[in-house]
Image 1 (cartoon, rainbow, N blue to C red):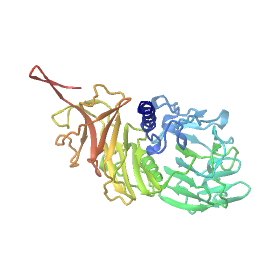
Image 2 (tube, rainbow, N blue to C red):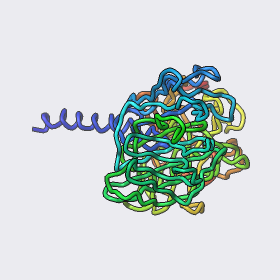
Image 3 (cartoon, rainbow, N blue to C red):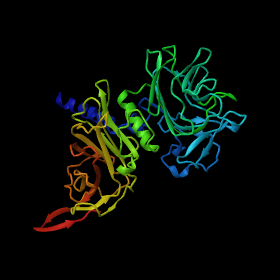
Image 4 (cartoon, one colour):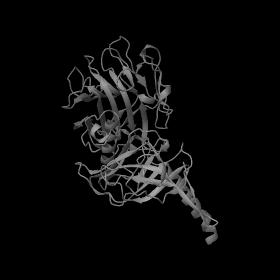
Length: 441
C-alpha cells in the first residue's frame, strides 16, 4: 500500500511545486503572466511588442497597428488605416498617442469584448482636453470617461441610452495620471480612483460594469480617446484592497511618483536613491484583503510572511544597476564578486510607519548569471542602513529550487528602508590536509 502511495504523493508534490514556482508576475506582483490568473490584459507602451525587449519598439511617429498584450492571454489591441494612433518617444515615457483633432477617430479594438460587472481596470496616461467628452475603455453599452459628456470637466461613466454618471473628480489634463475603475458583483456602484482621489460612483445597475471592446470610441467628434497612453491593465475579477495599494505603488514608482491614495513605497524618491524599478509587494488590509506572494516584473520573489498583520505591507524595488556579478567594492572580504544591482524595501503599515511582517522566504532568479551554487551564494543586507555592505555578515543557506531559482528561507533581516543585494563567497576545500582557497567569480 505504501509503495503505491509513494508515487502518488511524489506526483502531488511535483504538481504543487509547479504551481508554487509560477509566482505572481503581474503588475506589482498581482496576477501572473501565463494566462492562469485574473490578469487578462496588460499593455505597456515601453514594450509595445510585449516581447521583453524594449530596444525594438517602433520609431517615433509610427502608426500603431498592434499593441501586444503582456498578460499571456494574447488579448492584443489592433487597428488599421487612419484610425490608428501614433507611437511617440518624445516625452518622458514612450506612449501610444490618441489624437482627437483629426477628422478620423483614433481607437484600437480589443481581442475580447463585453462588459464585466466584477473587474478592475487601470490606465496610466497624460490626457489631453480635446473640447469634447473623453473616453478610455468603450463598447456599445458603456464607456469609462476621462471627462463626462458635454464638457463637464468631471471624470465619469456612461451607460449609452440610459444615463451619464459623473464624479466630483476633475480630469488631470496635461499631467501624468493613474485612473482605475473597480466594480464588484452585486453592487450598483463603481469605485473610481484618479491619482489620490477616490469616489464610489452610483451607476444605476448591478449588471453594468467595465467595457473592454476598445480603447476610445469609434465615432468622430465626441467621446474619443485623447492623449498619451503609457499602460493599460485589466483584471477580469475585481482585485482586493491590498492588491489595489500594491498596484498603485508599482505604477506610481514607475511613472515618476504620481500621487496615489496610499503611497507607502517611498524608495522611489530621489532622496532615497530612486529605487523605481520592478516594484512589487505583499500586504494585508484584513483577513479578506491580502496578498502574500509577489514577484512582479523583476527577479525577486517574496512569499510566506509569518507575521503579516492588518494594514501591513512589504514592498521592494531596485536601482536598475546592471544584473552582473562584477563588483568587488562595498562588500565583506569573503565576497569575491557582488551584484551591481541593489534593492531597497519599505516594511510599513498603510500610514507609512515601520512594522514587522515576520520572517519571509526570498527567492532570486539567477538566469543570466554563471557560477552560482548553494555553497557560494550569499544574501547581503545593509542591516544598519548606512549604505555599506562591507560591515555586514553575509547570509548563507540558499537552496536550489531548480530553473536557476535560489531561495533564502525564513529571512528576518529585511526591515524598513534597508538595502540588499547578493554576492558570491570564496569557498574553502580541504584536500590532502592542505587548505585550498577557491574564488568563485
